[in-house]
Image (spheres, rainbow, N blue to C red):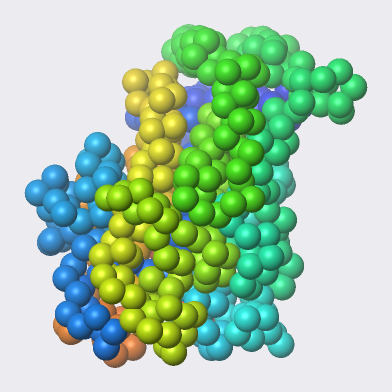
Length: 486
């Protein structure tokens, strides 16, 4: 495991400037990684209710594969043609599609609760909670990352859906067992939280002043002292100067000043955030994605969650792209019936409708990737490559809503940490048959290992300085997923 430890200069308002590894200030062999890289980050986009995967259901019968690539290996246009993932063709070479991501069989009393409440916690329900009243059993991955690498700040938790839906509405992010993380539903509120209102006396004057001052200027005294350090070689001083010049170049492209046009667009689009249907729903998610990209681009957050829908997505209704009509309740569609259980009448063509919803989520994820990719880094890569963005699901499919082979799509290498352009099982697959009919020994629990790997990629270290290996429930398999690391 290569070390990602860095030296930092710290200035006004918590501003930090990471330094290249300098030969004169450390022992050991020379470090060959001279590239100037942004701090890694993690952004999570949540989808409920599974995807339209190949299966045989009592409701519809044989359903063809409409989500997963045709075969393991390289992600190509041909490999994903006709699948929901072909909405992401522009990013296939910078993505990882993960197979064999299996959640634990914890008893939450409901398949949706089991999925959403362990998707970022790797833990069973909080003691004494069950089914519709179930609560997360521990800190969620977004908060764990943010508290470790963001100076103890909360992660940014954004929610597109009902405020008081099933499982309490916002239910993915947790401060601790049964202690929810407060979500922001209005994208413009999230924007003003990060950037202030730009009105004198609103309490954000120091923050705004800091943003308007070049980062190098905020740590200038420390820079000068470091450059004069007697142990620095001429090569070290040259590298430092190049590093500071690159930061200045980046500031030209990303000043993080208040952009009136961007602010107006976010404010106008946020007007319909209370409506989790049709264009208003999609617009809200897309604005959350733009705010998330700004948050990491400006160094204001390194961990963001965008939750779409309540605990079972029961309030979500998407537009049918083929005729412009409002489709049925997504939770109903996922069950293939006009009900939140197995009692309603069959929805004709519900498997196709589920596929159309998957395409909506793929396009929303693409909006996030587009926003990140718009920021160019000093080394010629984009902000997308500096971190990892994950589109994940609570369940594998519908209507069974099992928790094996749960979709996780990663984009961005986190500064070279992750492999790219592949569809790969996170651990070796054994046994065949339908996803939800595999035996427990054929579907080992891998969610905690995935969480460990993402946390490590995002810059979190264990107390001994090594990688994170024990996030989540201590009874789950730990360690890292070597198959997805570069």
